[in-house]
Amino acid sequence: MRTFCNPILPGFYPDPSAIRVGEDYYLVTSSFEFFPGVPIFHSKDLVNWRQLGHVLDRPSQLNLDQIRPSMGIWAPTLRYHQGVFYMITTYVDTEKKQHNFYVTATDPAGDWSDPVWLEDAPGIDPSLFFDDDGKVYYTGNRVPPEGQDYPKHMDIWLQEIDLKAGKLVGPKHSIWQGALKVGHAQEGPHVYKIGGWYYVLIAEGGTGHTHAVTIARSRSVTGPYEGNKANPILTHRHLGRAFPIVNVGHAELVETQHGDWWMFCLASRTCGGYFRNLGRETFLAPVSWENEWPVVNPGKGVLEFEAAAPDLPETKWPQPPARDDFEAGALAPMWNFLRTPRGEFWSLADHPGYLRLRLKPERLSDLANPAYLGRRQQHLSFRAAADMAFCPGAEGEVAGLVLLQNADYHFRYELGLESGERALRLIERRGGEEKLLASAPYTPGKVQLKVEARGQEYSFYYRGDETEKWTILLEGADGRVLSTDLAGGFTGAYIGMYASSQGAESSRYADFDWFSYEELD
Image (cartoon, rainbow, N blue to C red; front, top):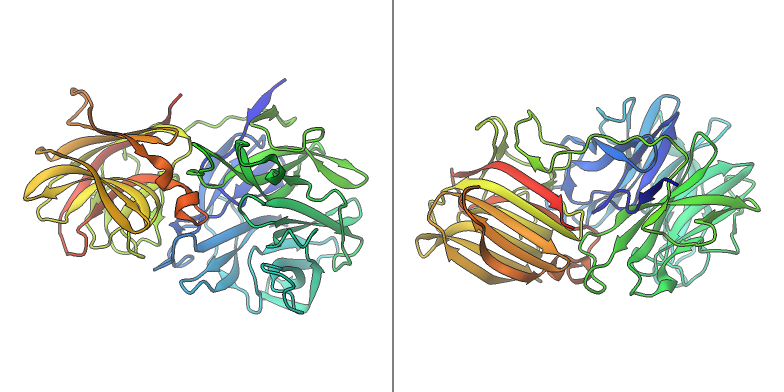
């Protein structure tokens, strides 16, 4: 029996939404304050995925200026109808106000249109449903029109949408308020029509430990909807905090070309206690139908790290190399900026075969766009390294590696000046307070920096080049500073390259010859 391993998208890939188009599957996830926004993936077998790029890859589509950590792009939904792909999502602005919009494309790899913003579309987590009669419906959540009966009490609502005109039309319909009042935070709705029934699948319980998936059905798209007496149909909240997969929820149903059903959902892996450095990841589970209700992973009812693979031809894609030598004409799709990139601070052309980062005054701790380029941490144990050439010219000019959870929780492993002399420094920022964990004099302008994480023990090394042995700067730093359980928010840890003049103007730059990342056994 062929099996697959969960998570199918390891690392910070939450709120999955997936569709089938013929024999091809496409999937998108949330991206919050990172740019480009909404990564999009392609698969033939539901298990092996390749990234096509991002849906929101132009500043005209996505302005993340001064966006707070974990704001920005929330919970996209991907749909396809009559040759057109639709991605609809929520943008949360600097004042935490919510705005819903959609973009379209005929090729999921792009280019996608500029946003169509929707008026009078309250709430978050919008979805589209194309009915058999040609009508299209918008579904989202909102505060109940009659008011909230308890904290985070939300209403799932539905309204017809005119996609050509880009506006909602007709009356709003309250269709469901969840399975149980203790569920709270009803969100993430998706509507399907299956076998003569309309189903609304939602998330309840908040995106933390009590997260859950519930479902209701109706013979009419506008209701009334009856909840499944077996709700929640998927959760891990009853398994305790020692279970290795937690906060399961925010799901999507997909039918294969052979009539089999599968559920995508988010969940997290814990490490070193109830700490979730990787954020919320994308998992997969089989679904069967009994009495016209879905049963998730029949006989087990939980997500598994290994399970029987879908009955689809296995299609593996070439994997990106562990080392990026920056020799392509464009950045690989794994790379992200922090907020929308402003100014010409990075280049692959100025020094061919290198990534050049020009120092910007902005710091990682600022609600700004620093000279930073990062990728997701995808494994509980990993090794990452980079080869950097940098000559600081003044106090405060720094460049190096960063392990980032957010503006106030991160490690900076940087080369700079210390009392006029070049030195390597490891700085931990925790809750807005900074602490120098280690430093060492380092005279050359070229250095290779490495971090190895084994669980929550993060160790830092350096050397001049491949001819030298690694020198330890610090072993066993506490990696829990990178967990959402300390830092808060909805994202996962990143690791990347950084250059800053920390409030001053500078004409200097750092050249990175390569960056590597790989899982450790």
